[in-house]
Figure 1 (tube, rainbow, N blue to C red):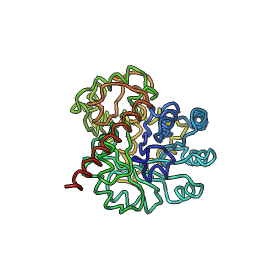
Figure 2 (cartoon, rainbow, N blue to C red; figure 1 turned 180 degrees about the horizontal axis):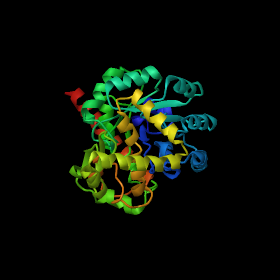
Figure 3 (cartoon, rainbow, N blue to C red; figure 1 turned 45 degrees about the vertical axis):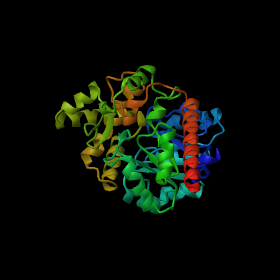
Figure 4 (cartoon, rainbow, N blue to C red; figure 1 turned 90 degrees about the vertical axis):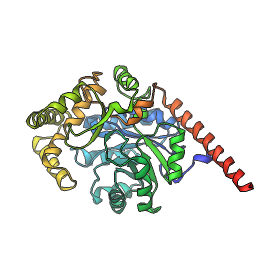
Length: 361
């Protein structure tokens, strides 16, 4: 265990420097608890849980594990302040987010000992996140699923590590699934890895078996493409019927689909129409998104729901890292973590032996 102990383990209180990322409709209480019980650190996906059910899920996780865990959210969802209150109330160890909360919200979290771990995609974003109070940063390279950038993980991680200059732990994400990847990330200077797709393909994740099987059947990374059809921003997904339909749709049709999904999302979250428009405008002020993209962002959770909740992988979109193309089976969290740890330790022993031989020459 000591071979893999890093500052990230101390920060989050986990046994191994492995994070199970929050994925909408995927990262439920069972997955978060199973990840923690296996020695990783799990995040509950708080952005796609009805407001009145978030506390229920936090309590359920605590009933399933004594391991620390986190909650993911973004400041633009209608119940963001309520999630912060619940995180503080239940002494949740950490929060993660991609669209950074304001300094005031971060300050309140940190005042109560909650670790803030944003996901970023560029060195300048890491620097800004740290200025706002981030305790660690997760850096996702282009191979990662969902919203992603264009810089490969192997190039982006060292850039961010140099920019951060040891101020906070850096977590590498995008293309990781095994112990070799963990050792590679540590060699770059990262303090651990974060995985989404590998945990989506876990027995304890929320999606129905039919959806998981679609990921297993995707045995070619080239089938996992980047598209702007959902909300105008690049997202990596498995090619399927729904994505092809959205790609062919004209801008007006896409916008009408987005408005329809926005209304469905409003009913789901309990937000008012005015509140959603206000959130969309706020998103444009605090990011590079246009108003049209902000409105279309409601597309993602509701279209993903078709696959991840309803078990209709052809009727929804399938966010995925390229790594799904080389994962051929669904395993339990315990099996996933044990395999990663065993392989990483073996690789580290081999490297240590190599270094010892060189020292004797």
